[in-house]
Amino acid sequence: MNIKPNRKSRLNRFPANSLLIAAGICLAACSSWGQGEAKAPHWQPLFNGKDLSGWTIKGDKGKAWVKDGEIVCQRTANTTEHTFVCTTAKFEDFILESDCKLDGNFHSGFLLRCEDAPKDAKVRLLGYQVKIDPTPRKWTGGVFEDFGPTWNWMYSLANNAPARDAFKMNEWNHFRMEAIGPGIKVWVNGIPATNLINKKYPSGYIALKIHALPHPDPALEPVLIHFKNIRIITDNPAKFAQTMDIPAITVP
Image (cartoon, rainbow, N blue to C red; front, side):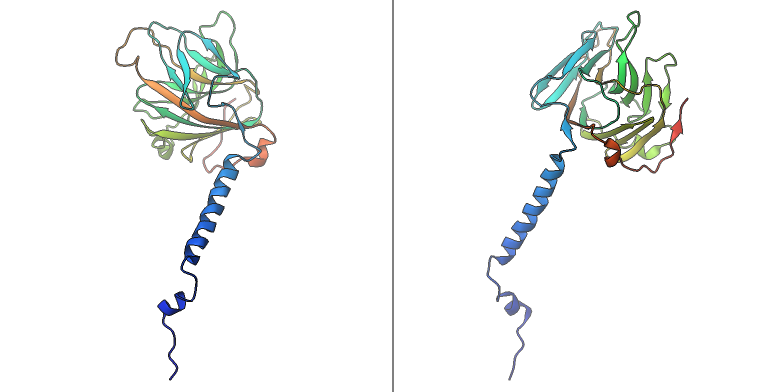
């Protein structure tokens, strides 16, 4: 009488460690893909994780230092002017990514294509500011014209509820910012936040903002903001641009 082998006996025909070998190959392939993407040649580090080489401090007496692969920023009491951790190089079209963690009430942001302000201005840089907004309004990822003549929100999150909930306080958040031609696009933790069209600032520095603190405030002075994994694409960034399903707004 012929007896068909059951499932267990069929599995026993293979070497005992064959499944482990297959799993190992799969994990190795997945791991290699992730590392390859992180180290893909189109990405270049904008921060080396060790020191502020390629960056400079502009503005007042806000503090910035490097620790554990992060740029850490802190406000200083009795400062009436904002401080900026600013690249020494200028950029035109690019895709910028960074991780950011905010410990508390600390207004900050990424300045894109910013330029030196006139000497008689109260701040050192003007440009597009991708806001990091800890207020109940929660407009993190919106774009503000930082100290321009109009002093206004160019793209708020008033009509973008999903984006208002994207940023998480006291956690690491991922920002993706595309500045290609007149288009400025921002994602926060993968959620589309801004789709702006504006030609005012075609090129300039990239900077991290440290908000002024005009008076002593024991509750705010210890608060820190952290940035890490700052990387950029400058070689044909349009090739790597992502589509966005929120409407573009043109600001003259």
